[in-house]
Image (cartoon, rainbow, N blue to C red; front, side):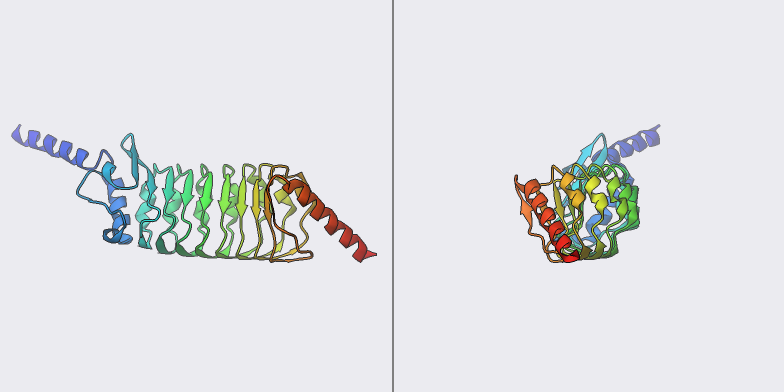
Length: 274
């Protein structure tokens, strides 16, 4: 009986020392702490205390649902164990010094709605496993060192409202399947090394408010169909290899300015044909 009582006490103390989260989730956080030089963070963790007291961690119903560690001097590579935090809805590691490739285990985070990894030094290809995160609404990977072409698996993220991949070293074309991202409001591939023609299928993204494609190697013309994007208030396509140089537009007059530019481009093409 005495042994049983001691066992129960130990289990109770252990449960509360984890901040009501599972040992598996706590170990995943500790792996993150160790892999990113946690002792040197701006706001560090006392890993001997309850998890729900750790800076940037949000716990709901004994599950870790958010990690917000932006501007916190994280250095190193993300560990594979991050994929064990299966209840996460939001990750924000923006403005840090993270390096290396994104672990493929990030594809295990099926409840993720927001993934913000901008302003770091991640490299390698964008993992195709991100395409399995069907609840994702915001994907911000801009200002890193990602290379390779855009995974077509991302075209299956039909809940996306923000796809911001600017200021990397991405190559290849914009997939024509991009029309499937019908909820997109902000789309940015600016400042990469992407090429090919700007697909007319972007005109099917009727909720689009911002389209940033400048400073790439796109060719051809801006599709006339873009005039149907009535919500578009910001368009940047300069510094490409397009047949015509288009001025950047932003503000309430954007639709009329876009229409004017496209009409001028069409008139120029007609003159050249004659």
